[in-house]
Amino acid sequence: MKRKRIIHSGISTFERYLTLWVFICMVIGVLIGVYLPAIPQFLGNFEYANVSVPVAILIWLMIYPMMLKVDFKSIKKVGENPRGLIITWVTNWLIKPFTMYAIAAFFFFIVFKKWITPDLATQYLAGAVLLGAAPCTAMVFVWSHLTRGNPAYTVVQVATNDIIILVGFVPIVAFLLGMSNITIPWTTLFLSVILFVVIPLAAGIISRTLITKNKGLEYFEKAFIPKFSNVTITGLLLTLIIIFSFQGRTIIENPFNIILIAVPLIIQTFLIFFIAYFWSKAWKLTHDIAAPAGMIGASNFFELAVAVAISLFGLGSGAALATVVGVLVEVPVMLQLVRIANGTRSWFRPSEGDRSYETT
Image 1 (tube, rainbow, N blue to C red):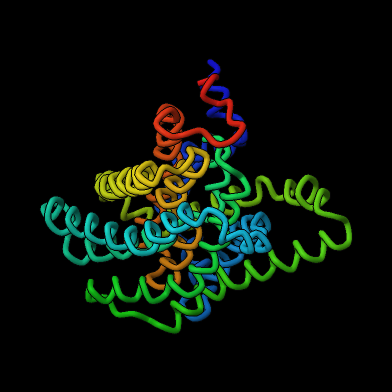
Image 2 (image 1 turned 60 degrees about the vertical axis):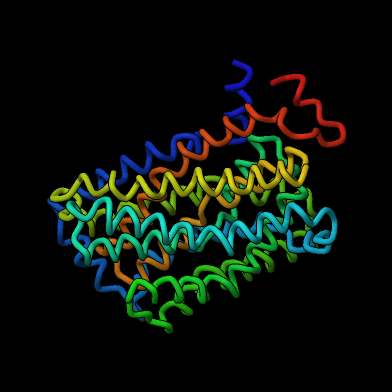
């Protein structure tokens, strides 16, 4: 019972049952797409440069509250204990995108070729690539808390990760999509990063600066940020309803494809976690740094992946569906990794003042 309370503390009901809400939204969206096709047809009229305006608004609602949590002043601490940051950077940007590409390509084009057409396999691979190139920036705070990670160090990991996204996401995605013989709409790709990373990031920085200056840091962290506690999940769920309404007919005709997409995504999640986790153990890092290092790579910035997939390939594309399946499987898989991390705490040397070894 004690272990269960530890696992669930710090995670809201919305977050804890995210997979259930995603499944419910999937059903609602599919029903709308099949029985009320006029709704997705109407929403499809509101586009600019291949970007769905209704979805863009909802995605801003998802991402802005996340960016509020990132304190970029923490970057000045980069020089303190750099090994954990090196593991995070290398795992997230030099390993994860390429293992995701390799694993997804192997399953979609070889293992599952009897059930997936080459065109659909290419679209699913594109969605997997977008997930692999977008390491987590927000939910990692939850995973770090659940594994009793070092909160200050986690902030530095996330802040530096967000900066790397600004310069690393587009070239990595373009390179891997190019390997898949997918035409790269560079304008849309850059526009997506500006819309869904740069603008919300700038808004978060400005909000943090102004509100902290006028009302203090305690008000900002304990009163202002909590106002958005359910906004992110609500925006995500509404976005999923829209996506699944466009995917309704495809899912009804090919429900097995959801499972096929999930397989390589789950394998990738476990692989990346253990790469960073065992690397941290080899470098003799403390558990409160090792666990978040594994979590930040294993988890995905799926809001960005979903947004870019929709912008590049459309709401009804296989790429968009693949990123949504990433949302579907992420929470239960990550909670399992939390249990693994907490159960192997004794493998690592304790941090100063860490009494958690006595209670697990």
